[in-house]
Image (cartoon, rainbow, N blue to C red; front, side):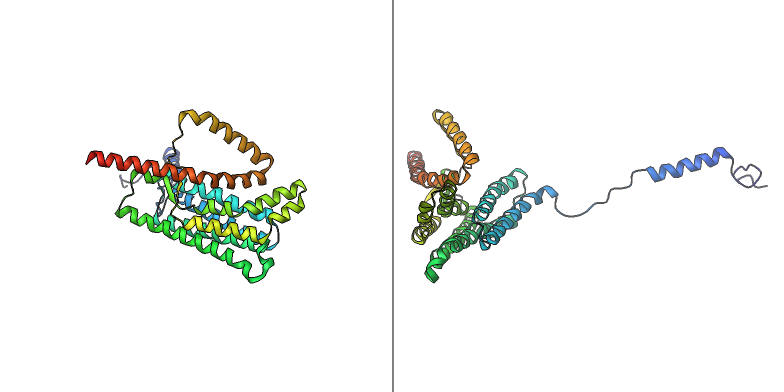
Length: 298
């Protein structure tokens, strides 16, 4: 008899205690946590800003589709939605530390479609096509100016790495940014919709005149490609004495945005354009102060 053979119950099988122990071992092996597979690639958090940018791009495309169907309010609303997305994706990228060159280029392409091509086509289909081929020229100029403004912004990113801007210049854009330009260009459409809802059809048709809309497109396109310093509101500091009036004004504007959204959007364009002279004055004052400090240090 082999002494090394496992004990048996007389029928060639291990005793019940040994069988139970082997069964528990097999069950434990099945229940034991398996090694988690490791995948190479980007974290999902780093993809969120690009997903937001794609949503903005799709919003611009949907706006064009609604304009083709003659649904002007829906088209304008989706361009506004793209503007909200554009204001969030860059901040999310910085918050999640997911900034990349790909994200910057993708954002610029999405901005060109949503804030350059889409507003131009919406306004062309809304009123500018009523004067024939000449009506397309202001729309074409606006879209080209939007592309030039975005290209200049991308080029400034590389130039900024080689030659950093002065500290005071980081709070300013060069020219009107594309989302703000789209909002200002759509001012006649916003105002006409607001007037139509009030029943002022004659005045709304006057606002819809191609000469007025074309002048707005040319003016805003010129502001986008200009060298005008405009506030970026990224590190904007508010003096203490104007904090309460500013909060009150923001609250009133939000109340107007909820009750009369189209009138609020039209007023937003006027407010933004009215802020441009103050932006230039602020930039000039900061530059003069920086030059004074530099002369005193030398």
